Length: 473
Ligand SMILES: Nc1ncnc2c1ncn2[C@@H]1O[C@H](COP(=O)(O)OP(=O)(O)OP(=O)(O)O)[C@@H](O)[C@H]1O
Ligand SMILES: [Mg+2]
Image (tube, rainbow, N blue to C red; front, side, top):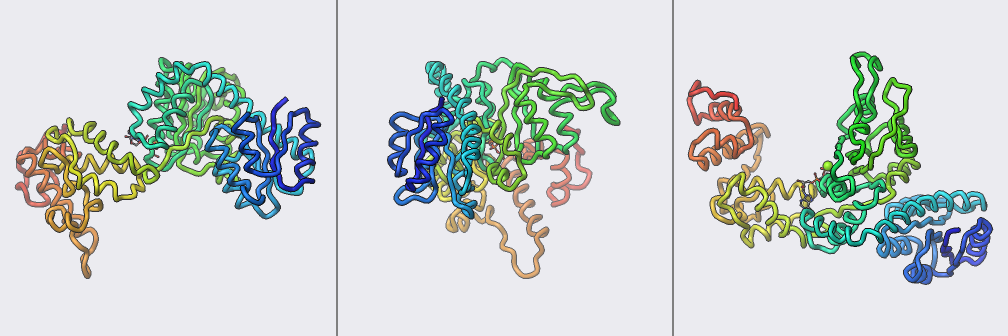
């Protein structure tokens, strides 16, 4: 028997739903307003909340947001009118589990409630584990805090969620824009889990063609296809006893989705071209920058697979949603990279921090890290200053003062390749001077091979043709 809250301001609808769910053997509490329903949830919790969308006062969307803010694992099903699909999809983005379109039969309501309650049961196991492992979890939270930089509110919440999720063996879906730290979180989920001494196997699903991906994940038998000269173990078998990280899995084909669903349900795999099934003990962590719920709504991603993967969803905030972390991250990256690139640099000037804080960071933490690395290459002092930063981060003032770093302005018929060459020549010249004309050092600063540097130095006339040809590094 589950505890279900039903919220609807229409008396007939509310009572009808309550009766149906009670008949199915559940404990049902019904509420006429969203606010009352949310208050009841906060006071005593529930396994499932079924709420109408259009209500006076607090509407269904607001109910979803309020419940999710209070309890990220809350399971909510939304009741919508025909033609309200867009709002329903919006609600799913906010974390609703599913929606039911009016009019519907009692059977439909029962079926939707059953599948939502199945998820609720897995989540309640996660919660129980969380409670039992509190001491472990607080230790883990400490560790997360040290490697996941940021003390903004969204990051503090995330750190706590990561620490807890790591303790449970549940499948985790890591969502977030590019560069927000999805892979970092996936590694942490493994490192802080009881499986930490087992393997962590990472697979970039979008990088491989469909047939390759299948044999990569599940392995193949000898002779399974042309070129399969011997048996090969797949990533799932390699990850046995540990964690498999499926990165960018928003892109996988329907056929692979079906196979993946089977692994998650049966915990066994079949090698490509093989008959035998092989048991695997693997914890699955997935990530995608896509909006998977929208992919489900568009019919490109299997709904049942989505729910298997999203037992514990973790949303990584974009950097622009937590600008207060920029300074902390920037200092962290200076410390992380200065030793290798430019050991004299110990920090950043307030102007540089200001410039970093004004930018929106569409590439998120990765873009910030790259910008700091670039700036370290050219910094002269002990602190990174605004003029060391990539040009797109500098204010007009700093750019004017920094003629060497200023971008040549395209004018008239000057083609782009010309401008890029110009820029390349300037960058190489600056690095060459900075490295006191030591070529291996210049190449290291620029992050290119010494042989490539020789070619470019020659091309731009900094050295004579044929001058001491380098050995491959
Ligand atoms: N909160 C953070 N604290 C410290 N470093 C971070 C944080 N978030 C991200 N990074 C660093 O930023 C870089 C990008 O992170 P990561 O590769 O995990 O992002 P991603 O979400 O997987 O990106 P993509 O979608 O581009 O693959 C990594 O070097 C990572 O260590
Ligand atoms: Mg990644």
